Image 1 (tube, rainbow, N blue to C red):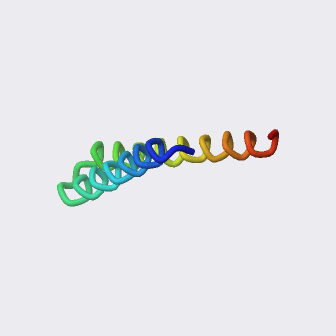
Image 2: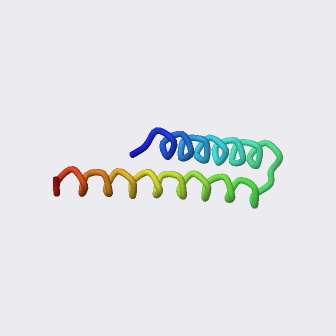
Image 3: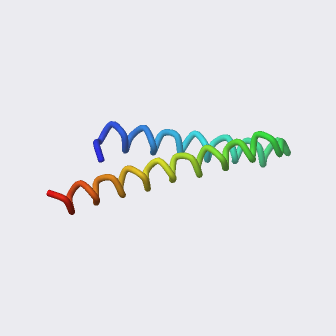
Length: 60
């Protein structure tokens, strides 16, 4: 996994955390859910990239 991909996923995860926190503070359920979804999306991307790297390493 490239450093650029890793930073992008981390940024997306942090953005999701911030949205979730702001949603909780303002009692905005939609923003809170959107933040959680952003975090799940970032985690899924990172897991996919790790699996791709593992496959690549195993086939070399």
